[in-house]
Structure formats: C-alpha cells, structure tokens
Length: 176
Image 1 (cartoon, rainbow, N blue to C red):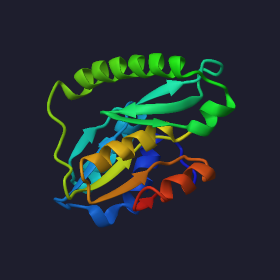
Image 2: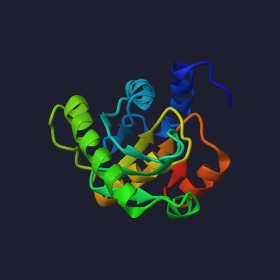
Image 3: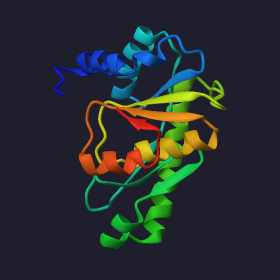
C-alpha cells in the first residue's frame, strides 16, 4: 500500500481499523512525533481515546541511526545479537540506557504533562507509529504495554520491513 503523506497513511489505517470504532475498551497509544500525527487522525475517525507512549532508542556507537535497543517506561529491550555482532560493551549499554531513561523522563513531562498513564488493564491497544525501522522502540513499547496487562495489542504503521513485521507478529495480536 502506498501513501502520499502521514495524513493519507492515517486515513488508510483508519479504514483497516474500523472495527474498533466507538469501542470503549480500545485506546490508541502513539509514538512521538510522527506516530502522534497519525494516531490523532485515527483517534478522531474512530472516536477512541489517544495517548502517547514514549520509548527511547539506545543507539550504536558506530552507527548513530542504528538502534541496538530501547527503553519504555521501566521496560528494556536489547537486541542481543546485534550487540554481540557489533562488539558493544556492557559499560556503553549501561551509559546509553541511563541517557535514554533521562531523555524519556523529559519527553514524558513534555508530552504527558505529568499525568498518570492510562489504565490499560483488559483494553485493546492500537499502537501507532509512522514507520518502523529496526523495531527496537516498538518492541520496547509492546513489552511496556504487556506489563500494563492490555488484553490485546495491534500494531499499526504505514511502513515496516518484512523481517521486523514477522518479529512483531509473534509478539502481538495483529500487525497492520
């Protein structure tokens, strides 16, 4: 499926998610920044609440755009194979984890205005992002949502590489 822009992607994803329209037990959690744009449009079209979830990447020292893991809430996801392949030290990971935690706290204050996280117990969560590359941030978000005892997680993103989609399908109810 091709998309002209984020708005077009949101409109098409809304159609794929229409069975959740007006469902009081469904919530959208969107990843800033682009996921919030898409999530907001979907939330309005489906008439369901929107909130943000803020995972932060742990990046490789050698490749600044390559996520070797992520943290979300108190949940940590590390791509152990990638860390091994790149020979990344535990000391580096711990330092980057602390930086990511601090950054996540700042972003939470900015986006969530210190309000408590929504109750996800027995809810269906539509986890929305504008694109998935390595999968690190979305996997950290998934694991954080599972801790909150969501009934079902559906990942909705207009763009994701097939190998990552396969990994996600093993972790959630559905990937759209």
